[in-house]
Amino acid sequence: MNASEKPLKPAFAWSAKDWPAERPSKKPDAEEAWVYSDKFSYFPGETVNFHISGTLPSVRLDVIRDGLHPETVAVFSITDVRNAPTSDEAYAVGCDWPVAQTWEIPAGAAPGFHLVQLSATTKSGEVWEREHFFVIKAPEGRQNRIALILPTSTLLAYNDWGGANLYRGLGNDPRADIATAIVSTQRPIGRGMLRKPEGAPREANHHSLPIGGIPRYPAYEWARLNDYCRHYADAGWAVYDRLFAVWAEEEGYRIDYLTQHDLHNDPGCLDAYDCAVIVGHDEYWTWTMRDNIDAFVDRGGGLARFAGNYLWQVRLSDDGTQQYCYRLPELDPLAKEKPQLATTVWEAISVGRPGASTMGLSGLGGILTRYGVAAPRSSGGFTVYRPQHWAFAGTDLYYGDLLGAAPTCLAAFEVDGVEFTFRRGLPFPTFEDGAPDSLEILAICPAVRGEENRFGNSVALGSPEAETTDLYEALGEDLPAYLHEGGMYGAGMIATFARGRGEVFNGGSTEWPYALSVRDPQVCQVVRNVLDRFTAGRRDGR
Image (cartoon, rainbow, N blue to C red):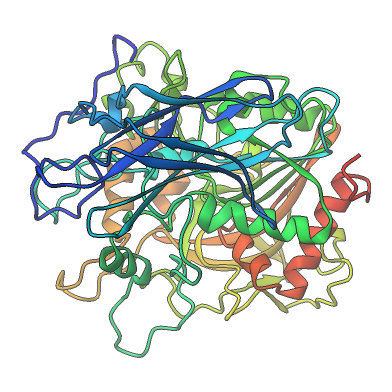
Protein backbone atom coordinates (compact mmCIF):
# COMPACT_ATOMS: atom_id res chain seq x y z
CA MET A 1 0.00 0.00 0.00
CA ASN A 2 1.30 3.49 -0.83
CA ALA A 3 1.96 5.59 2.25
CA SER A 4 -0.86 8.01 1.47
CA GLU A 5 -3.44 5.31 0.80
CA LYS A 6 -5.40 3.97 3.76
CA PRO A 7 -8.42 1.64 3.78
CA LEU A 8 -11.65 3.07 5.08
CA LYS A 9 -12.26 1.63 8.55
CA PRO A 10 -15.55 -0.16 9.20
CA ALA A 11 -17.86 1.86 11.41
CA PHE A 12 -19.08 -1.20 13.30
CA ALA A 13 -18.07 -4.79 13.90
CA TRP A 14 -19.22 -7.45 11.45
CA SER A 15 -22.90 -8.25 11.94
CA ALA A 16 -25.00 -11.26 10.94
CA LYS A 17 -27.57 -8.78 9.62
CA ASP A 18 -25.30 -8.02 6.70
CA TRP A 19 -25.39 -9.88 3.41
CA PRO A 20 -22.49 -12.19 4.23
CA ALA A 21 -19.39 -11.98 2.09
CA GLU A 22 -17.00 -14.91 2.19
CA ARG A 23 -14.24 -14.70 4.75
CA PRO A 24 -12.66 -17.20 7.14
CA SER A 25 -15.12 -18.36 9.76
CA LYS A 26 -14.43 -17.90 13.46
CA LYS A 27 -16.41 -21.04 14.29
CA PRO A 28 -14.19 -23.77 15.74
CA ASP A 29 -15.91 -26.51 13.71
CA ALA A 30 -15.76 -24.69 10.35
CA GLU A 31 -14.62 -26.76 7.36
CA GLU A 32 -13.38 -24.53 4.56
CA ALA A 33 -10.43 -23.64 2.34
CA TRP A 34 -9.57 -21.06 -0.30
CA VAL A 35 -6.82 -20.35 -2.83
CA TYR A 36 -5.39 -17.41 -4.75
CA SER A 37 -2.42 -16.99 -7.08
CA ASP A 38 0.18 -14.28 -6.67
CA LYS A 39 -0.50 -12.79 -10.15
CA PHE A 40 -3.29 -12.72 -12.70
CA SER A 41 -1.09 -13.66 -15.67
CA TYR A 42 2.16 -15.45 -16.52
CA PHE A 43 4.28 -16.51 -19.47
CA PRO A 44 5.29 -20.15 -20.04
CA GLY A 45 8.36 -20.91 -17.94
CA GLU A 46 7.25 -18.70 -15.06
CA THR A 47 6.19 -20.10 -11.69
CA VAL A 48 2.70 -19.78 -10.25
CA ASN A 49 2.51 -19.49 -6.47
CA PHE A 50 -0.70 -20.85 -4.96
CA HIS A 51 -1.55 -19.35 -1.58
CA ILE A 52 -3.92 -21.59 0.38
CA SER A 53 -5.50 -21.39 3.81
CA GLY A 54 -8.27 -23.35 5.49
CA THR A 55 -9.40 -25.78 8.12
CA LEU A 56 -9.66 -28.71 5.71
CA PRO A 57 -6.22 -30.34 6.06
CA SER A 58 -6.19 -31.99 2.61
CA VAL A 59 -7.28 -30.41 -0.65
CA ARG A 60 -6.98 -31.13 -4.35
CA LEU A 61 -5.99 -28.44 -6.81
CA ASP A 62 -6.94 -28.82 -10.48
CA VAL A 63 -5.59 -26.37 -13.04
CA ILE A 64 -8.00 -26.34 -15.99
CA ARG A 65 -7.48 -24.56 -19.30
CA ASP A 66 -11.05 -23.41 -19.73
CA GLY A 67 -13.03 -22.77 -22.89
CA LEU A 68 -15.02 -24.77 -25.43
CA HIS A 69 -13.19 -27.95 -24.46
CA PRO A 70 -11.89 -27.60 -20.87
CA GLU A 71 -8.64 -29.45 -20.31
CA THR A 72 -7.03 -30.32 -16.98
CA VAL A 73 -3.34 -29.48 -17.32
CA ALA A 74 -2.11 -30.04 -13.74
CA VAL A 75 -3.37 -31.70 -10.56
CA PHE A 76 -1.93 -31.32 -7.06
CA SER A 77 -2.80 -33.09 -3.81
CA ILE A 78 -1.93 -30.94 -0.82
CA THR A 79 -2.02 -32.68 2.54
CA ASP A 80 -0.68 -30.05 4.92
CA VAL A 81 -3.07 -27.12 4.57
CA ARG A 82 -2.74 -24.64 7.43
CA ASN A 83 -5.33 -22.21 8.72
CA ALA A 84 -3.35 -19.01 8.29
CA PRO A 85 -4.20 -15.75 10.05
CA THR A 86 -6.31 -13.42 7.89
CA SER A 87 -6.62 -9.68 8.42
CA ASP A 88 -10.08 -8.26 9.07
CA GLU A 89 -9.21 -5.88 6.22
CA ALA A 90 -8.10 -8.59 3.80
CA TYR A 91 -10.36 -7.08 1.14
CA ALA A 92 -8.00 -4.07 1.11
CA VAL A 93 -4.63 -5.28 2.37
CA GLY A 94 -4.66 -8.86 1.08
CA CYS A 95 -4.44 -12.18 2.89
CA ASP A 96 -0.68 -12.73 3.09
CA TRP A 97 -1.14 -16.51 3.26
CA PRO A 98 1.84 -18.81 2.79
CA VAL A 99 2.60 -20.48 -0.53
CA ALA A 100 1.23 -24.01 -0.29
CA GLN A 101 1.99 -25.15 -3.84
CA THR A 102 3.97 -23.95 -6.85
CA TRP A 103 3.72 -24.82 -10.52
CA GLU A 104 6.38 -24.05 -13.09
CA ILE A 105 4.45 -23.53 -16.30
CA PRO A 106 5.90 -25.79 -19.01
CA ALA A 107 7.69 -23.98 -21.83
CA GLY A 108 5.25 -25.43 -24.36
CA ALA A 109 2.08 -24.76 -22.34
CA ALA A 110 -0.90 -23.64 -24.40
CA PRO A 111 -1.85 -20.02 -23.69
CA GLY A 112 -5.33 -19.39 -22.36
CA PHE A 113 -7.57 -18.76 -19.37
CA HIS A 114 -6.83 -21.21 -16.56
CA LEU A 115 -9.34 -22.01 -13.84
CA VAL A 116 -7.84 -23.07 -10.51
CA GLN A 117 -10.32 -25.39 -8.82
CA LEU A 118 -9.80 -26.25 -5.15
CA SER A 119 -11.82 -29.19 -3.82
CA ALA A 120 -11.99 -31.16 -0.59
CA THR A 121 -14.34 -33.51 1.23
CA THR A 122 -15.72 -32.54 4.61
CA LYS A 123 -16.22 -34.93 7.53
CA SER A 124 -19.87 -35.30 6.57
CA GLY A 125 -18.96 -36.30 3.03
CA GLU A 126 -19.91 -33.03 1.35
CA VAL A 127 -17.66 -31.62 -1.35
CA TRP A 128 -16.27 -28.12 -0.78
CA GLU A 129 -15.19 -26.28 -3.94
CA ARG A 130 -13.80 -22.82 -4.57
CA GLU A 131 -12.01 -21.26 -7.55
CA HIS A 132 -9.34 -18.83 -8.63
CA PHE A 133 -7.76 -18.13 -12.03
CA PHE A 134 -4.77 -16.99 -13.98
CA VAL A 135 -3.95 -16.39 -17.63
CA ILE A 136 -1.06 -17.94 -19.54
CA LYS A 137 0.03 -15.36 -22.09
CA ALA A 138 1.32 -16.22 -25.55
CA PRO A 139 5.10 -15.81 -25.78
CA GLU A 140 6.72 -13.77 -28.53
CA GLY A 141 6.36 -15.40 -31.91
CA ARG A 142 3.41 -17.58 -30.90
CA GLN A 143 0.67 -14.95 -30.71
CA ASN A 144 -2.63 -15.15 -32.53
CA ARG A 145 -4.12 -12.03 -34.11
CA ILE A 146 -6.84 -11.40 -31.50
CA ALA A 147 -6.24 -10.60 -27.82
CA LEU A 148 -9.14 -10.80 -25.36
CA ILE A 149 -8.45 -8.34 -22.55
CA LEU A 150 -10.08 -9.51 -19.32
CA PRO A 151 -11.54 -6.56 -17.33
CA THR A 152 -9.74 -7.44 -14.11
CA SER A 153 -10.26 -3.94 -12.68
CA THR A 154 -14.02 -4.48 -12.74
CA LEU A 155 -13.59 -7.96 -11.25
CA LEU A 156 -11.61 -6.42 -8.38
CA ALA A 157 -14.21 -3.72 -7.85
CA TYR A 158 -17.03 -6.23 -7.35
CA ASN A 159 -15.11 -9.01 -5.60
CA ASP A 160 -16.21 -8.83 -1.96
CA TRP A 161 -14.17 -11.75 -0.61
CA GLY A 162 -12.85 -10.75 2.78
CA GLY A 163 -15.84 -8.59 3.68
CA ALA A 164 -16.13 -5.61 1.31
CA ASN A 165 -15.79 -4.23 -2.20
CA LEU A 166 -16.05 -0.85 -3.92
CA TYR A 167 -19.82 -0.83 -3.32
CA ARG A 168 -20.58 -2.19 0.14
CA GLY A 169 -19.64 -4.47 2.98
CA LEU A 170 -18.57 -2.22 5.84
CA GLY A 171 -20.78 -1.32 8.79
CA ASN A 172 -23.65 -3.35 10.19
CA ASP A 173 -26.74 -1.69 8.71
CA PRO A 174 -28.01 -3.59 5.64
CA ARG A 175 -29.92 -0.47 4.57
CA ALA A 176 -26.77 1.67 4.39
CA ASP A 177 -24.01 0.30 2.18
CA ILE A 178 -20.52 1.47 3.07
CA ALA A 179 -17.81 0.77 0.50
CA THR A 180 -14.10 0.36 0.84
CA ALA A 181 -11.95 2.62 -1.35
CA ILE A 182 -9.21 0.00 -1.70
CA VAL A 183 -9.36 -3.59 -2.93
CA SER A 184 -6.58 -6.15 -3.13
CA THR A 185 -5.54 -8.73 -5.73
CA GLN A 186 -4.02 -10.91 -3.01
CA ARG A 187 -7.16 -12.75 -1.92
CA PRO A 188 -9.63 -15.32 -3.25
CA ILE A 189 -12.48 -14.37 -5.57
CA GLY A 190 -16.16 -14.48 -4.65
CA ARG A 191 -17.98 -17.72 -5.33
CA GLY A 192 -19.66 -17.78 -8.75
CA MET A 193 -17.58 -15.12 -10.48
CA LEU A 194 -15.33 -17.71 -12.13
CA ARG A 195 -17.56 -20.80 -12.23
CA LYS A 196 -21.31 -21.11 -11.79
CA PRO A 197 -24.08 -23.59 -12.52
CA GLU A 198 -25.71 -23.45 -15.94
CA GLY A 199 -28.77 -21.24 -15.90
CA ALA A 200 -27.90 -19.08 -12.88
CA PRO A 201 -29.77 -15.76 -13.40
CA ARG A 202 -28.22 -12.69 -14.98
CA GLU A 203 -28.66 -9.09 -13.90
CA ALA A 204 -30.65 -8.29 -17.05
CA ASN A 205 -34.44 -8.65 -16.93
CA HIS A 206 -35.48 -11.33 -19.42
CA HIS A 207 -39.12 -11.14 -18.31
CA SER A 208 -41.12 -7.92 -18.58
CA LEU A 209 -42.50 -6.31 -15.43
CA PRO A 210 -46.29 -6.75 -15.08
CA ILE A 211 -48.46 -3.65 -14.68
CA GLY A 212 -48.19 -2.54 -11.07
CA GLY A 213 -45.39 -5.01 -10.44
CA ILE A 214 -42.49 -4.49 -8.06
CA PRO A 215 -38.89 -4.99 -9.17
CA ARG A 216 -37.25 -8.37 -8.77
CA TYR A 217 -33.56 -9.14 -8.88
CA PRO A 218 -33.27 -12.87 -9.65
CA ALA A 219 -29.46 -12.90 -9.51
CA TYR A 220 -29.46 -11.51 -5.95
CA GLU A 221 -32.21 -13.88 -4.84
CA TRP A 222 -30.45 -16.90 -6.34
CA ALA A 223 -27.10 -15.92 -4.85
CA ARG A 224 -28.57 -15.52 -1.37
CA LEU A 225 -30.46 -18.81 -1.56
CA ASN A 226 -27.45 -20.78 -2.82
CA ASP A 227 -24.64 -19.12 -0.83
CA TYR A 228 -22.94 -17.48 -3.78
CA CYS A 229 -21.29 -14.09 -3.94
CA ARG A 230 -23.86 -11.32 -4.09
CA HIS A 231 -22.01 -9.92 -7.07
CA TYR A 232 -21.40 -13.13 -9.03
CA ALA A 233 -23.52 -11.77 -11.92
CA ASP A 234 -21.84 -8.36 -11.95
CA ALA A 235 -18.36 -9.30 -13.13
CA GLY A 236 -16.04 -12.14 -13.98
CA TRP A 237 -15.25 -14.99 -16.33
CA ALA A 238 -18.31 -17.17 -15.65
CA VAL A 239 -21.02 -14.66 -16.61
CA TYR A 240 -19.25 -12.71 -19.35
CA ASP A 241 -15.84 -13.57 -20.82
CA ARG A 242 -16.33 -17.34 -20.94
CA LEU A 243 -19.47 -17.02 -23.05
CA PHE A 244 -17.57 -15.02 -25.65
CA ALA A 245 -14.55 -17.35 -25.54
CA VAL A 246 -16.66 -20.46 -26.15
CA TRP A 247 -18.51 -18.79 -29.04
CA ALA A 248 -15.26 -17.58 -30.60
CA GLU A 249 -13.69 -21.05 -30.43
CA GLU A 250 -16.79 -22.61 -32.00
CA GLU A 251 -16.58 -20.06 -34.80
CA GLY A 252 -12.94 -20.90 -35.48
CA TYR A 253 -11.36 -17.74 -34.07
CA ARG A 254 -8.09 -18.29 -32.23
CA ILE A 255 -7.64 -15.85 -29.38
CA ASP A 256 -5.01 -15.06 -26.79
CA TYR A 257 -5.68 -13.70 -23.33
CA LEU A 258 -4.41 -10.64 -21.50
CA THR A 259 -5.65 -8.80 -18.43
CA GLN A 260 -6.10 -5.11 -17.78
CA HIS A 261 -3.14 -5.42 -15.44
CA ASP A 262 -1.01 -6.47 -18.42
CA LEU A 263 -2.33 -3.46 -20.34
CA HIS A 264 -1.36 -1.23 -17.40
CA ASN A 265 2.09 -2.69 -16.81
CA ASP A 266 3.28 -3.43 -20.36
CA PRO A 267 2.80 -0.75 -23.05
CA GLY A 268 3.86 -3.28 -25.67
CA CYS A 269 1.54 -6.12 -24.69
CA LEU A 270 -0.66 -5.51 -27.76
CA ASP A 271 2.15 -5.00 -30.27
CA ALA A 272 1.69 -8.38 -31.97
CA TYR A 273 -2.10 -8.15 -32.26
CA ASP A 274 -4.40 -6.76 -34.93
CA CYS A 275 -7.52 -6.78 -32.77
CA ALA A 276 -8.13 -6.22 -29.06
CA VAL A 277 -11.47 -7.42 -27.68
CA ILE A 278 -13.22 -6.43 -24.45
CA VAL A 279 -16.52 -8.04 -23.47
CA GLY A 280 -19.14 -7.87 -20.74
CA HIS A 281 -18.97 -5.54 -17.78
CA ASP A 282 -16.06 -3.16 -18.34
CA GLU A 283 -16.41 -0.31 -15.85
CA TYR A 284 -13.00 0.60 -14.35
CA TRP A 285 -9.76 1.72 -16.07
CA THR A 286 -6.53 3.42 -15.09
CA TRP A 287 -5.09 6.41 -16.94
CA THR A 288 -2.22 4.23 -18.15
CA MET A 289 -4.55 1.55 -19.50
CA ARG A 290 -6.26 4.23 -21.56
CA ASP A 291 -2.93 5.56 -22.83
CA ASN A 292 -1.93 2.10 -24.01
CA ILE A 293 -5.23 1.22 -25.71
CA ASP A 294 -5.30 4.63 -27.41
CA ALA A 295 -1.77 4.04 -28.70
CA PHE A 296 -2.75 0.60 -29.99
CA VAL A 297 -5.63 2.06 -32.02
CA ASP A 298 -3.57 5.04 -33.20
CA ARG A 299 -0.95 2.77 -34.74
CA GLY A 300 -3.56 0.76 -36.66
CA GLY A 301 -5.19 -1.65 -34.22
CA GLY A 302 -8.86 -2.52 -34.12
CA LEU A 303 -10.61 -2.25 -30.75
CA ALA A 304 -13.74 -4.41 -30.58
CA ARG A 305 -15.67 -3.57 -27.42
CA PHE A 306 -18.67 -5.82 -26.88
CA ALA A 307 -19.14 -4.39 -23.41
CA GLY A 308 -20.84 -1.68 -21.39
CA ASN A 309 -20.61 0.71 -18.43
CA TYR A 310 -17.32 2.53 -19.10
CA LEU A 311 -17.33 4.94 -16.17
CA TRP A 312 -14.62 5.17 -13.47
CA GLN A 313 -10.93 6.01 -13.27
CA VAL A 314 -9.00 3.89 -10.77
CA ARG A 315 -5.35 3.74 -9.72
CA LEU A 316 -3.11 0.80 -8.92
CA SER A 317 -0.46 0.64 -6.23
CA ASP A 318 3.17 0.64 -7.31
CA ASP A 319 3.34 -3.16 -7.05
CA GLY A 320 -0.07 -3.61 -8.72
CA THR A 321 -1.60 -5.52 -5.82
CA GLN A 322 -4.10 -2.84 -4.77
CA GLN A 323 -6.70 -0.83 -6.64
CA TYR A 324 -8.00 2.54 -5.42
CA CYS A 325 -11.32 4.21 -6.16
CA TYR A 326 -12.52 6.98 -3.82
CA ARG A 327 -15.41 8.08 -6.11
CA LEU A 328 -15.05 11.77 -5.15
CA PRO A 329 -11.87 13.82 -5.68
CA GLU A 330 -12.26 15.40 -2.24
CA LEU A 331 -11.78 11.95 -0.66
CA ASP A 332 -8.82 10.97 -2.81
CA PRO A 333 -5.46 11.73 -1.13
CA LEU A 334 -3.74 12.21 -4.50
CA ALA A 335 -6.33 14.52 -6.06
CA LYS A 336 -4.86 17.83 -4.86
CA GLU A 337 -1.40 16.97 -6.17
CA LYS A 338 -2.55 15.33 -9.42
CA PRO A 339 -6.21 16.16 -10.09
CA GLN A 340 -6.18 14.39 -13.43
CA LEU A 341 -5.58 11.09 -11.60
CA ALA A 342 -8.46 11.50 -9.15
CA THR A 343 -10.42 8.26 -8.88
CA THR A 344 -13.81 9.47 -10.00
CA VAL A 345 -15.92 9.50 -13.17
CA TRP A 346 -13.97 10.21 -16.34
CA GLU A 347 -16.32 13.08 -17.13
CA ALA A 348 -15.12 15.11 -14.13
CA ILE A 349 -13.73 18.45 -15.35
CA SER A 350 -10.73 18.13 -13.01
CA VAL A 351 -9.78 14.84 -14.70
CA GLY A 352 -10.08 16.39 -18.14
CA ARG A 353 -10.34 13.17 -20.10
CA PRO A 354 -13.94 12.25 -21.03
CA GLY A 355 -14.52 8.54 -21.42
CA ALA A 356 -15.97 8.93 -24.91
CA SER A 357 -12.65 10.22 -26.23
CA THR A 358 -11.22 6.70 -25.89
CA MET A 359 -14.24 4.41 -26.27
CA GLY A 360 -16.59 6.60 -28.28
CA LEU A 361 -19.31 6.05 -25.65
CA SER A 362 -19.54 6.58 -21.91
CA GLY A 363 -21.44 5.06 -19.00
CA LEU A 364 -22.88 8.42 -18.03
CA GLY A 365 -24.52 8.61 -21.44
CA GLY A 366 -26.77 5.69 -20.62
CA ILE A 367 -26.27 3.35 -17.62
CA LEU A 368 -29.37 1.13 -17.13
CA THR A 369 -32.07 -0.51 -19.18
CA ARG A 370 -34.23 -3.55 -18.53
CA TYR A 371 -32.90 -3.89 -14.99
CA GLY A 372 -35.24 -3.80 -12.00
CA VAL A 373 -37.52 -0.83 -12.80
CA ALA A 374 -34.94 0.89 -15.02
CA ALA A 375 -36.73 0.98 -18.41
CA PRO A 376 -38.24 -2.37 -17.34
CA ARG A 377 -40.47 -2.88 -20.38
CA SER A 378 -38.13 -1.66 -23.10
CA SER A 379 -37.73 -3.90 -26.13
CA GLY A 380 -34.43 -5.35 -24.96
CA GLY A 381 -32.95 -4.58 -28.36
CA PHE A 382 -31.13 -1.77 -30.16
CA THR A 383 -33.16 0.14 -32.77
CA VAL A 384 -31.10 0.21 -35.98
CA TYR A 385 -30.66 3.58 -37.73
CA ARG A 386 -27.80 2.93 -40.15
CA PRO A 387 -28.45 -0.56 -41.55
CA GLN A 388 -26.07 0.01 -44.50
CA HIS A 389 -23.06 0.24 -42.17
CA TRP A 390 -20.41 -2.45 -42.63
CA ALA A 391 -21.07 -3.79 -39.11
CA PHE A 392 -24.55 -4.90 -40.23
CA ALA A 393 -23.52 -6.60 -43.47
CA GLY A 394 -25.29 -9.93 -43.93
CA THR A 395 -27.77 -9.34 -41.11
CA ASP A 396 -30.75 -8.33 -43.32
CA LEU A 397 -31.48 -5.54 -40.82
CA TYR A 398 -33.63 -2.64 -42.01
CA TYR A 399 -33.97 0.91 -40.69
CA GLY A 400 -36.02 0.72 -37.50
CA ASP A 401 -35.43 -3.00 -36.91
CA LEU A 402 -34.47 -4.25 -33.47
CA LEU A 403 -31.13 -5.98 -32.99
CA GLY A 404 -31.14 -8.52 -30.15
CA ALA A 405 -34.63 -7.79 -28.78
CA ALA A 406 -36.22 -9.90 -26.05
CA PRO A 407 -35.83 -12.73 -25.31
CA THR A 408 -32.18 -12.21 -26.33
CA CYS A 409 -32.04 -8.84 -24.51
CA LEU A 410 -28.83 -7.51 -26.03
CA ALA A 411 -29.76 -4.01 -24.82
CA ALA A 412 -30.10 -4.77 -21.12
CA PHE A 413 -28.48 -4.26 -17.71
CA GLU A 414 -25.80 -1.58 -18.26
CA VAL A 415 -25.23 0.35 -21.47
CA ASP A 416 -23.13 3.24 -22.76
CA GLY A 417 -24.02 6.25 -24.92
CA VAL A 418 -23.25 9.86 -25.79
CA GLU A 419 -25.16 13.12 -25.99
CA PHE A 420 -26.94 13.16 -29.34
CA THR A 421 -29.63 14.72 -31.47
CA PHE A 422 -31.75 13.67 -34.44
CA ARG A 423 -31.63 15.20 -37.89
CA ARG A 424 -33.86 13.93 -40.68
CA GLY A 425 -34.43 10.62 -38.96
CA LEU A 426 -30.81 9.87 -38.07
CA PRO A 427 -28.91 10.25 -34.77
CA PHE A 428 -25.80 12.42 -34.56
CA PRO A 429 -23.47 13.17 -31.62
CA THR A 430 -23.57 16.70 -30.22
CA PHE A 431 -19.86 16.36 -29.26
CA GLU A 432 -20.32 18.29 -26.00
CA ASP A 433 -19.13 15.22 -24.04
CA GLY A 434 -15.81 14.60 -25.79
CA ALA A 435 -17.13 12.20 -28.42
CA PRO A 436 -14.67 11.75 -31.33
CA ASP A 437 -15.33 13.82 -34.46
CA SER A 438 -15.72 10.67 -36.57
CA LEU A 439 -18.20 8.92 -34.25
CA GLU A 440 -21.10 7.31 -36.10
CA ILE A 441 -24.13 6.14 -34.09
CA LEU A 442 -25.52 2.93 -35.59
CA ALA A 443 -28.27 1.90 -33.17
CA ILE A 444 -29.93 3.15 -29.97
CA CYS A 445 -31.91 1.89 -26.98
CA PRO A 446 -33.56 3.88 -24.14
CA ALA A 447 -31.72 4.02 -20.83
CA VAL A 448 -31.99 5.72 -17.45
CA ARG A 449 -29.42 6.71 -14.84
CA GLY A 450 -31.22 5.02 -11.96
CA GLU A 451 -34.42 3.27 -10.97
CA GLU A 452 -37.45 5.45 -10.32
CA ASN A 453 -38.85 5.05 -6.81
CA ARG A 454 -42.63 4.65 -7.16
CA PHE A 455 -42.92 2.61 -4.01
CA GLY A 456 -42.60 5.11 -1.19
CA ASN A 457 -39.33 3.53 -0.05
CA SER A 458 -41.19 0.30 0.78
CA VAL A 459 -39.22 -1.65 -1.85
CA ALA A 460 -35.43 -1.93 -2.00
CA LEU A 461 -34.10 -0.94 -5.42
CA GLY A 462 -30.94 -2.34 -6.94
CA SER A 463 -29.75 0.98 -8.38
CA PRO A 464 -32.03 3.84 -7.27
CA GLU A 465 -31.99 7.28 -8.88
CA ALA A 466 -30.69 8.73 -5.63
CA GLU A 467 -27.29 7.09 -6.17
CA THR A 468 -26.78 9.10 -9.36
CA THR A 469 -28.31 12.35 -8.11
CA ASP A 470 -26.22 12.16 -4.94
CA LEU A 471 -23.07 11.62 -7.01
CA TYR A 472 -23.90 14.53 -9.30
CA GLU A 473 -24.59 16.81 -6.34
CA ALA A 474 -21.37 15.78 -4.61
CA LEU A 475 -19.30 16.45 -7.75
CA GLY A 476 -21.11 19.74 -8.29
CA GLU A 477 -19.29 22.13 -10.60
CA ASP A 478 -16.68 19.47 -11.33
CA LEU A 479 -19.24 17.92 -13.70
CA PRO A 480 -20.00 19.49 -17.09
CA ALA A 481 -23.23 21.49 -17.22
CA TYR A 482 -24.90 19.11 -19.67
CA LEU A 483 -24.91 16.33 -17.07
CA HIS A 484 -26.71 18.49 -14.54
CA GLU A 485 -29.22 19.55 -17.19
CA GLY A 486 -29.92 16.10 -18.53
CA GLY A 487 -32.18 14.66 -15.84
CA MET A 488 -32.30 10.88 -15.48
CA TYR A 489 -32.70 9.89 -19.12
CA GLY A 490 -30.07 8.75 -21.57
CA ALA A 491 -29.50 6.14 -24.25
CA GLY A 492 -27.47 3.05 -24.93
CA MET A 493 -25.80 2.87 -28.33
CA ILE A 494 -23.77 0.91 -30.83
CA ALA A 495 -21.19 3.15 -32.49
CA THR A 496 -17.95 3.19 -34.47
CA PHE A 497 -15.19 5.71 -35.09
CA ALA A 498 -11.72 6.01 -36.60
CA ARG A 499 -8.71 7.02 -34.54
CA GLY A 500 -5.26 7.53 -36.02
CA ARG A 501 -4.64 4.56 -38.32
CA GLY A 502 -7.07 2.32 -36.41
CA GLU A 503 -10.74 1.87 -35.68
CA VAL A 504 -13.06 1.27 -32.72
CA PHE A 505 -16.34 -0.62 -32.64
CA ASN A 506 -18.26 -0.11 -29.39
CA GLY A 507 -21.27 -2.34 -28.78
CA GLY A 508 -22.28 -0.32 -25.73
CA SER A 509 -23.85 -3.13 -23.67
CA THR A 510 -22.79 -5.70 -21.10
CA GLU A 511 -24.97 -8.38 -22.73
CA TRP A 512 -23.13 -9.19 -25.96
CA PRO A 513 -21.62 -12.40 -24.50
CA TYR A 514 -25.06 -13.68 -23.52
CA ALA A 515 -26.52 -12.85 -26.93
CA LEU A 516 -23.69 -14.86 -28.51
CA SER A 517 -24.28 -17.76 -26.12
CA VAL A 518 -27.92 -18.08 -27.24
CA ARG A 519 -26.75 -17.80 -30.86
CA ASP A 520 -28.86 -14.83 -31.84
CA PRO A 521 -28.12 -14.95 -35.59
CA GLN A 522 -27.97 -11.22 -36.26
CA VAL A 523 -25.84 -10.50 -33.17
CA CYS A 524 -23.46 -13.30 -34.15
CA GLN A 525 -23.13 -11.84 -37.64
CA VAL A 526 -22.32 -8.37 -36.31
CA VAL A 527 -19.53 -9.81 -34.14
CA ARG A 528 -18.16 -11.80 -37.10
CA ASN A 529 -18.17 -8.64 -39.21
CA VAL A 530 -16.19 -6.73 -36.59
CA LEU A 531 -13.63 -9.45 -35.90
CA ASP A 532 -13.14 -10.23 -39.59
CA ARG A 533 -12.68 -6.56 -40.49
CA PHE A 534 -10.15 -6.04 -37.71
CA THR A 535 -8.21 -9.19 -38.63
CA ALA A 536 -8.44 -8.80 -42.42
CA GLY A 537 -11.01 -11.58 -42.68
CA ARG A 538 -8.79 -14.41 -41.43
CA ARG A 539 -9.83 -16.72 -38.60
CA ASP A 540 -6.79 -18.98 -38.38
CA GLY A 541 -5.14 -16.48 -36.01
CA ARG A 542 -2.02 -16.17 -38.12
